[in-house]
Image (cartoon, rainbow, N blue to C red; front, side, top):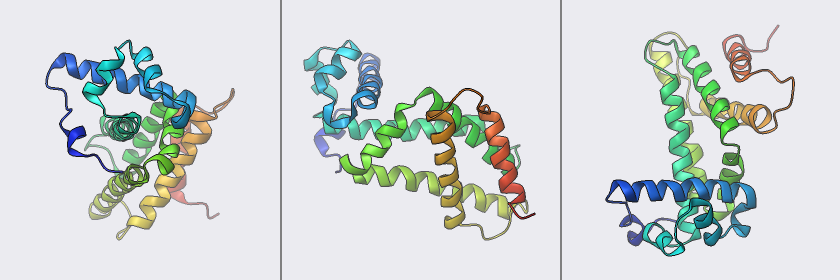
Length: 203
């Protein structure tokens, strides 16, 4: 599903409008995370947000529309979390370690992200695919830059980027979503994964 022009025209024009839209997106994250797409309702989203039901349609056309917007919003939040955790002074391997640690912390604080992104495969396949393709492209670019700097193997590309992304996704599932007492902290999980990247598994 793609956004139509009526949805595009609903970008808030005031700070108050932006705050209201933010409340609706945050409430939608909880609603979809708790109940799933099909059992969630617009009325429940507006109640959680403390927003009048009629105001919902000022910002979104439908439940599908706010779900699509939420997937994009979560993808952007993951990107921002990684961006804020890294800087140009870090080595390429340190960047991957910091990006993973930031993702683990983000997923731990926003456990609903896994359910929402998984449901997007069926509710909005286009945004589901875009979510992972965009992350894969960012990782591939970081690997390429590390290769050019002579600090990573040359010619690392899409396959390696998607392998790295897959590792990160499942580490998040195990240690952020399915976390249990006694698990290593996010920084330790990231350290162990980073050691695997640096050294491989060969004896």
